[in-house]
Length: 300
Ligand SMILES: NC(=O)c1ccc[n+]([C@@H]2O[C@H](COP(=O)([O-])OP(=O)(O)OC[C@H]3O[C@@H](n4cnc5c(N)ncnc54)[C@H](O)[C@@H]3O)[C@@H](O)[C@H]2O)c1
Image 1: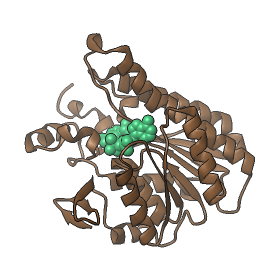
Image 2: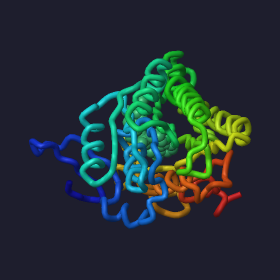
Image 3: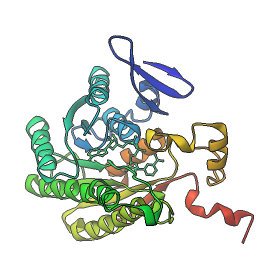
Image 4: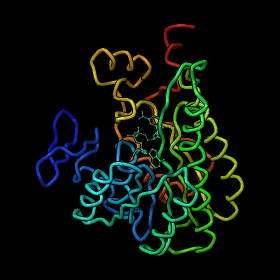
């Protein structure tokens, strides 16, 4: 693995560039964060973990001591490279292909995970995508596809997780019966014209997360969301890949830098660990202040 321009470049055995993740720290820099292995003995499923934020979260959870399922739907070679990397660095990972919008696929992923690792303690429902269009040009297919992956996918994975937590009962590896982390967005609260399907799916995740958290708190299941702002990943390359685009993006970020997947990985470990034991039903925005309405710093 080589690093260049803050990008981690991953080369296959033939020396070909097979994938890259932006801003994932080196193995050593991530290890320095979790010497006490707060997730030791636990198993996590991370959906959409062969790219971007999901990859970063999977790497952080693995270094923090969890067995990690690297879920993917396309690009198996990218998933394999991440799984191999984690396993050869002293972690424990398994790649499982499943479409999060497909009920049978999600059930099979949980069954495979339980067969391999015994149970599931942590779900990071991260998989998501955009199909952007002006509202009057948006097709029903674009609307339904985004809803199926971003909202129904989070429902199906969270339901399977809650069922497994209850089936398995309390274990001595965590104070909670189970932990669910939904990958939401600042767009669960900031409207986003031109992306009405995406913003609606993230607004839906807000009430999925809060209502579920309320329902299962008595069983000691914790449910929270991470609301990323602008994080450098393949989903939004156009927004930061030229100096002009990045300068325009920075006007929306008071902290004056675009986020990295490590910024998200660290919060995922926190929400999955007993460090956050008394936190449930909350969205933690990891956005450099994007939700602070930065336009009002000089206007209004
Ligand atoms: N990057 C950002 O700035 C940003 C900001 C806010 C929220 N988010 C959210 O973070 C999450 C990850 O996004 P990212 O930026 O890493 O983008 P990404 O495109 O790099 O990763 C998305 C992942 O989801 C996977 N995926 C898509 N459909 C799937 C399906 N049906 N089943 C399983 N996996 C599927 C993709 O293959 C990919 O691995 C998304 O939910 C996104 O909405 C990202």
